[in-house]
Every structure is written in structure tokens, then in C-alpha cells.
Amino acid sequence: MLSQAVQWLEVRSDSLGDVDPDRLRRNFPGRLLYSLRSRAEGGHFEGSDRQRRDRLLRAAQQYDLIDLEGERDLLPELLAAIPAYKRLISWHGQSLDSERLSARFEQLATVEARLYKLVSTGAQVGDELAPLRLLKSLGRSDTIAYATGQMGFWSRLVAAHLGAPMVFGMVAEDRRIHGEPTIAQLIEDYRLPALTPLKELYGIVGNPVSHSLSPRLHNAAFQALGYPALYVPFQVQSFADFWREMIDAETLPSLGMPLRGLTVASPHKEAALVVAGPKSPMVRWAGSTNILFRTNGTWTADTTDPEGVLPILRGRGIPIKRKRAAVVGCGGAGRPVAAALDQAGAEVMLVNRGLKRGQFAASLLGLPFIPLSEFKIEGFSIVVNATPVGRDDNQQPFALDRLGEDAVIVDLVYNSKPTPLVRGTRSLGRVAIEGREVLLTQVLRQFRLMTGWNMSRNLARQILLPGRGEGG
Image (tube, rainbow, N blue to C red; front, side, top):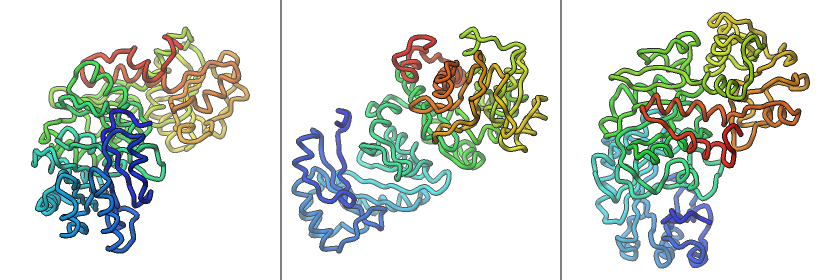
């Protein structure tokens, strides 16, 4: 059953065939949009011009809105049968610069319609900006423009704040289609269809970031505080390219929504240091940052990775000083955690699959290192998994068969369910701290650093750990 927040249902007849609209109306109280996307515009329809015309004419008698492709369907016969209030005139294609995209819109707008839709396929960082510039320049409420794909996903969210009257999402997740959000995600993570004033942008930059719960947490906090901001995911391969297009080019301020803070995820935790001005002592020591925020016109780098481990251990009364600790994974998250454990008095061993990264971390932090192939868990009181293993697969990063009776496992990875590592540890009757608990402690400090405000701890717990009391 679709949420009551959904006002329109698009029927992609090029994929589904011509379904019975009366049946849809019995189960959906909103309005229906008929689309017959051609191969030329990224769809599946390959029939003749006559077949296409017949299907569109038939649909015009049954649907509330008909998607007419600007390159193919603006024919006298169709326009005579489909009144302007039933027309959505669309274009789907490869990314265009702002000038050419504006010209494309002017071409579509020569035919009167209820809505106009321009959707580009982003190929590189910055391609998603032209649709947003178009919306800003038009200042209209009848035009939808955004970029598709995981890289362009954030543009459809911002587009709504620039006048786009619709935000498209899928009824159910389809892993074959990358970058298309579900309706549930749009509602839960981005609070749609409610639109509050937007004066600032925040986000998470990494690759991948689609699994992140940070947007849900930050946007819920913004809504609770009445804070005029939006937190979006930036999935990028090159942090340098992202910074050049999004920050140095000053495009976002020109749209009226400057970027004020970033959560930095893998694999950009080292590259992000290049753009930072002030750096916290831990960032300088570990050579890694997971948060950038603007203060007095400059970008400050800090890390909250240690906050995800030490406060939880201390809160549970787990001793750290003089305890043997192993940190598995020597990347941008593992190094700050290892450094913080060392500072707290633990005897820390670095563990990594690749020798080069492990040896680099050992020289940087002054800590011993062994390859993962030689790692034995026996004798360690605290073991932290700082690798991505278990997030997208059913694997454990290391064996648990000799885990000590009083040992504690901390898994930085989180998923919709406890990871194999967490489940395996608990099945042995040992303590396992899962990634959602880690994220909870981190996000509270990140929100404070970026905005100067406090996120409600209870709100964060309700989202991350529903049904559990404090310490559950």
C-alpha cells in the first residue's frame, strides 16, 4: 500500500505493458501518469510510430496526465486529442551544459502543457548542476529538472526546493536500477512531501553512500529543530573533482543554498585533508578526517571516528587501559580509532589485509602491525572491525573461534540487520557493539560541529535503535 503522501502514480507502460487504470484507481486514490518511454530516451518501447500513437491516444482517455516526448510525440493528431492540462512534455538524454539545457527547455515550452520535464544522465561530477541552474533561472512551478543516477540523486531533492512540482521515486527497490530512490526512502530520509525553508546544504560525500543512514538522522533533526537545511548524499569517485565543482565554483551559493558541512566517508577521508585549513590534533596524527565544516570562511577538518568506540566502551564499564586491542582495517576510520585506543592506554595492534596500507599506518601512528593472514584473535580483549566486510555480503572479516570469554567486538559496519560478525559474536555469548550504536555517538557530535546545535539523542535512538532503551 502506497503512503498517503504519494499524490501521483506513474505507470511505465514501456516496461509493464498497458495495465488497467480502473484497477489502479481502486487501490490508489491519487492521480495517474502514463509514460511510454522510448529506447531513444532510456526506456523500453520499440514499437512503430502508429503503435505508439494508438497507445497514447487510448491512454489519454483513461489517465490524468500523459507523458509526451518532445522529440517524438508533439504531433497534430496527438495534440488535438490530448488537451494541454493533460500534457507532460519531457526530454531524457545525456547531460547538457546550462546554455544547451535552457535551449532545450525553450523548445519544449513552445507547446502548451501542464508540466515540463528535463532529465539528464550525469556522467561526471557537476553534470547535476545544469538542471538546478535551469530551475533557478526559470522560477517556475511547472518544470521538473534533475540528473539521474547515484551521482545525480541529490539534485532531484534540491530541485523540489527550486520549484519542481514532483519528485520521482520507485514503489519498490530494484537493484538493477542504480540511483533511483524508493518512495519510502524519499519520505523517511528526506521528509517529503513536506518542504521547509532551505538556506543551507549539508551532506555525506563518499563512494558508496547509498546505504548511509546519516541523511535520515540529520534531516529528522533539522525538522525537529525547525532548522532551514537539507542533508543530501554526494556519491563521487574523485573528491578533488567534487570540491572543484561544488565548492570552488561557488555554484551552490548562487542557488541560495551554500554547503556548510560534510560527513566524509570512504574512500575520501585522506583526500579531504587537502582542502582543509585548521585540523584537529587527532586528524593530524591519524592523517584522516570524517567531517569538514565551515568556520569563519574556512573549512575545518575533524574526526568523530574515535567517538564511535571509546565512549561506548567506557559507558558499558569495559576497561581499556593496559588491555590488548586489535584494530582490523588501517584506512581512514581504523587509524583514528587505533590512535584513540592508544591514547587511552590500550596495547594496540594494527591489522590489515594489504601490507602497504598496514605498514603506512604503523609508521604514522608508531604502533605494531601484522597482516590479516597472520592475525589470531586469541588474547585480545577489544577487537574493532574497521573494514567494510559484512556490509554488502555475508562474510566475517576474521574468525571468532578463539575469542576470549571477556572479549568485546566493535563493528563499525552497519546494515538493516546485525552483521555476520555481530551475530557470530553474540552467538558465542560475547559482547558485540554494532555499527548503529557507533553511528549514534558519532552523528551527535557531527551535527553539533556542523551546525552548532544539538541533535536530540532520543530522536537519533528512535531512528537507529527502535524499541531499545538506553544502553540496549
